[in-house]
Amino acid sequence: SWLHARRDVRAMAGCELNGSIAAGRMLQVWPACQFERLEGGEIRFGDEWHWPEGPVPSRHVPLDLPPLFRLNGRALRQGGAHQVDGNLTIPPGHVWSGDLIVLGNLRLARNARIEGSIKAEGTITLEQGASVVGHVFANEGIEVRVGARITGTAATEGILRVRWGAEIGSHKVPSTATGAEILMEQGSRVFGVVMAVEAGRVALRTVARIAA
Image (cartoon, rainbow, N blue to C red):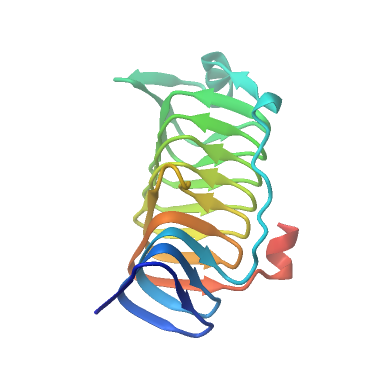
């Protein structure tokens, strides 16, 4: 089944959106809705209209390759990317420029930024205010926390969680967010396509998640 609108579509709380739902301009989906595939110039989840500003680029500190060796013991160049054995954390406020392959879990601490595409065999977590200017691929799961941003595709074979104030894509660069399961929290946004292979739903922003 499908529903395509030239301008806007609003799905109120508790809707079951089976098949493809598309809007030429804005698609708004409220909490307790379930979905399979959503497409729109801007997809808003929930009824909250204000999102935090993105991180200020001038506050980021460039992170060169040597700190990766100190953090993880070994980093090898694989084609145009660096491959890191084990888990990796980009420290708060730091920047990594270049593509990364992580043979474990990858975590971007608060306000960290990666300018390049990333792939992890485990999970990828973007803490508050973190950002990736590139594509994000993870085998086990992706979590995009408060105010974090991904400008490229976000894809995982596990669960994709997008928290309040987080964004995937932009007005100028539409993107695709996909996962086996997708949890979009009220107050999050995607510009482009959201596609759940098994199940997608919209959740309320809870006090526990605000504290996190």
